[in-house]
Length: 171
Image 1 (cartoon, helix red, strand yellow):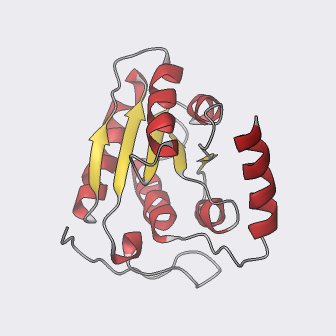
Image 2 (cartoon, one colour):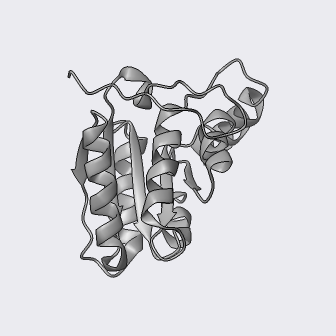
């Protein structure tokens, strides 16, 4: 799929981002939220489409946000989608619920450095954001950074990630 390739100046201290959002390759991204976060989810979906990614909406009507988080996490863990993005009031509930799914590695994004390290150091495949705790512009920047990063299997973090993946997949 031919997407729009956007470049940005790395906003985090590392200076090592792949500066093409999504690495130049379109990703399939599953989205979900609770009823409190529809506006932010919609904004982030539009951003991802502008960046050349394919998006799918897993809903926002269920007040039991865990149901939506589990659906998104299952689809990402099954590799039906490359990554997932979940939004609720704080992002915490979605993160906890998603992390109950084997193969789902959800991280709460609150600042640019953590958004980067969520992928580079922890190989997260689901980003969680709080609609009540961060503004829309910050959320957009966090998603851009998170999507631009890749996990390096030869990094110093690889053994740590391998250990929790081993535990996760064996349970």
